[in-house]
Length: 321
Image (cartoon, rainbow, N blue to C red; front, top):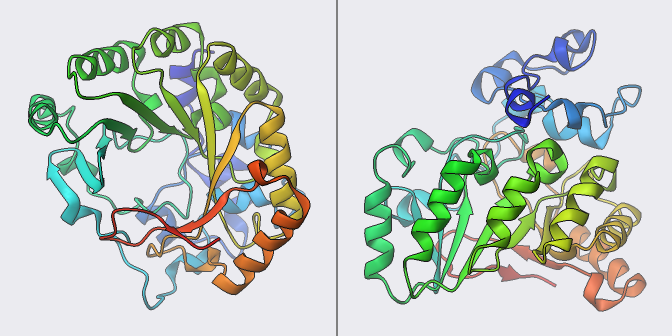
């Protein structure tokens, strides 16, 4: 099956996810309506459905806890809408911008900080791409573009190649970063054509993965990561610290070791962004620091990701440890 068909055939109902799933008392129809379930088959195959608290299932399952109001949790937890300079460009950090190239994702993670983002109003590929390029050409202080979304690797190869080619015409851009979850949730997507267009870019792209748990690293994902590394592409990982998913030291230590064994450097461990509907994933800072200390005591320094929090309006991540 092609990756496009695999993406089109992603699971979007609890019944398709697993037999009888919709009958669980913790399933929320309201949460499903507000942020639809979406799971690629490759990720579904990694879930242990005999385990009610499976950490992969917890990341994608519309739970009734999403309905509960939580003080301090909002639709725009990082105040991103105020940082949009032109359609699709978020200027949050010094010297670099995020380019929102699509609202599509291969998987809908329930803790996603952009689960309420108005992609329809902020997608440069919907007729506003030239405005984004013009803004970048005018702002010579920008030297790095971060492709984000949604997931930029949901774009077909021809559109992604055209986008990178356009960016390469802007001489003051020196780095390109791609934030993606696809190599672990839809590994079929990462084939020779995609790797080739990244490899030939003058930017020497950095691919920043999002892996939260060792069980996400399938045999297919291992092959994809190896192919990317053999092409000389730098691989980093950022995780989100999530209650009931990876909030124990053994899991985080194993994740760092497994990633590094596949050529991926642990980069950030994020505190949860306070997005409405995700409060049940929150780990308090004291517990997060305790977990991080165990990692520091157990792992070599280069395998310990920085524990960070993002605060809307700041031009950098707040490093906690």
